[in-house]
Image (cartoon, rainbow, N blue to C red; front, side, top):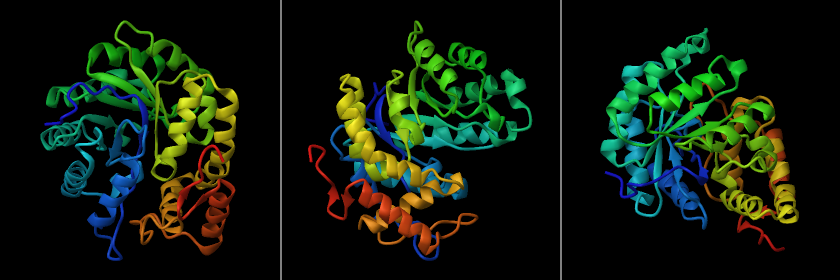
Length: 320
């Protein structure tokens, strides 16, 4: 059972990476070190494991349990740990959710089932049934992962409102709508409901612009590299300090342009390489179908880190 019983997802939440050995088995020692590097940054409100950033698509249920257990053992007394629920079927999703609660997670990040990609957005009752089955398996607060509508895995605005009514344990959305007008509508509407639902932006390629719309937090894979800058940016925006926010964003910009360049699927691969360059990971191994980056791209990552003022001794002081 989680020690953070009243946790409500908000604030700065890094989505952490997964360290692997040369044989592609889990490197638990390095993964635990990485968890500490993220979770113990002043101002971080929680960490997420078993998400996109930790290659959950390529991990078995037993490995997901191992990752969660190791994460809780390492940082579970310091911050809430959010566990991803990534499954194409609702029964398996509920099984993962129950496992996460039993292990001691504080919340769930529920991915849309890929099985709904061929028109599930036209059947809102499918999304509601999926979330209800998960909620029946656990009392943990749920973060609904909202994808772009173009992916056919996103939920319409009306479907989200129906979801919130049907599943009261939904406490937040991880908003990747990738539509500025819709994103602002989410922020203004969902956070003002009689039972407010926080909007956690994951628009990491335009993070400052997104936060200024009033999001109550952010949940981002790039927080695995620059959690301190995310905290500083979030605090500056919350304080209405535009000049400070712009200065921090100037440092984030070269990294967001590099991490989220095409092909988008390599974003977390690039973040692993950044951590190696910074001396925070020993090696950057990914599981197929992801593949090792070439030297030219690694050189671009090194340049972006330099432009951001981040070196092997850690991020440059924000006042510098």
